[in-house]
Image 1 (cartoon, rainbow, N blue to C red):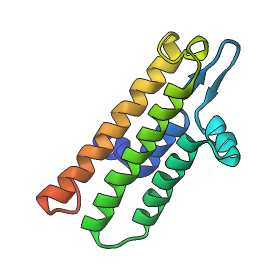
Image 2 (cartoon, helix red, strand yellow):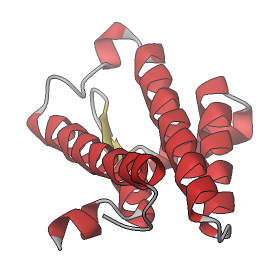
Image 3 (tube, rainbow, N blue to C red):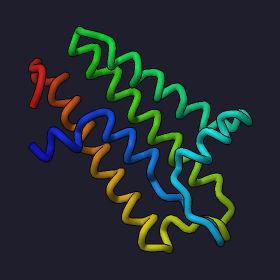
Image 4 (tube, one colour):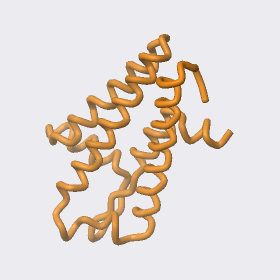
Length: 131
């Protein structure tokens, strides 16, 4: 039951959107700088938007093998955008690994992403609709 909950696409995306990004004076969810940077054309956000579109398209596809493949590609692209965003932070503002709460949110997002990937890889490789 818990695996089904944390491997749901909405939970995987929500865990990434609520990933806490810390600066010297503020801690905010990743979704806020993602949207602000998307409007400015910042390339990690543009890459993440492609992943979000793939996940949205996958939600409306009824062929489960294609859906699983789009889910895998979409979440991997979203994770690449998060990594690129964190690598773009200046060294003095790179707090996600120093503070406890952002680090815990990073671990939680990682667990949800891995569960989502494993569920979809299992669907794709075994030829079944669910775990």
